[in-house]
Length: 64
Image (cartoon, rainbow, N blue to C red):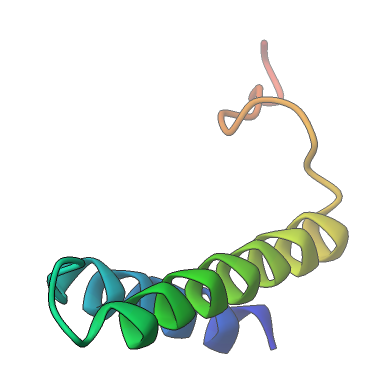
C-alpha cells in the first residue's frame, strides 16, 4: 500500500504547487497540497513500519 501512497502523494503535491496561489484556483491548490502531504506522510509511515528502518538509509554490511 505504501508503494501506491507515496507516488500519489507526490503527484498531488506537484500539481498543487503547480497551480498559482494568486488565482481563483487557490482553494484547489491548497486542498491538493494538504492531501498530498497527508498521503505522502502516510505512505512514508507505512514504509517505516514495514521495513522497521528508523535510523540511517545506509545499512552496514556483514563485514562492517
